[in-house]
Image (cartoon, rainbow, N blue to C red; front, side):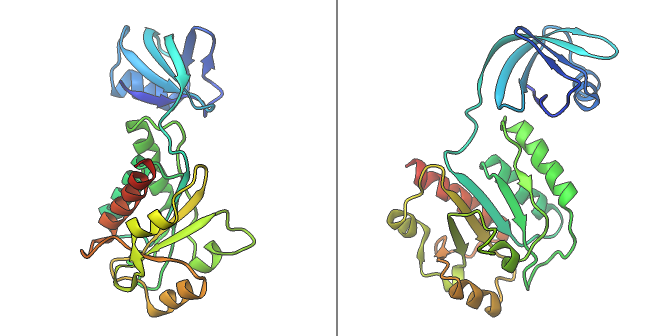
Length: 245
């Protein structure tokens, strides 16, 4: 069932039994790109994270009228706040990171220009668009945020940092495995956790020393050496698995 966000535009109208879609982006996508017809079903979600299962009743030149069949709060969310900070990768690899991080429920991604960063260009607008489209595909109610490119010094500012816990994944300098770490320090409901993944070339000695000075745990994903985009998927997935298990 196609999934669309309707709560970001004041042109749309939601009543007790009907939703009228008037915003240009959704109208064009539904009426022209998908060539939707009457009696087809749409899944719509508003800015209060309420999902509506609807049936199209009318499509005219300006709007789409949908009958509400049922509605309910979205359950497509984690019970804790998971964030990712990672060194931007080249080309499609970074797009994969943004897409998969969204599918795995992150609240936001912080691109960090590390010493060995492969990409020194801020493509935040493009990355945010990928996260938006991925949210639609996996029926997420809340679109994650791609934050402005930053540095570790800015991200770890004690006066502004919103995180309860920061986990650094560093295969060659790890202190313990993720499983061991999470068994000793279980994830708590509503906790804000930041996961840090480095570039393909790894963190520099300066950055490792910075993590040590900040008393951040250096965690391993196992004996295998993973590419950065694979490490993102594995780390996020394993944290979610350990929490749910």
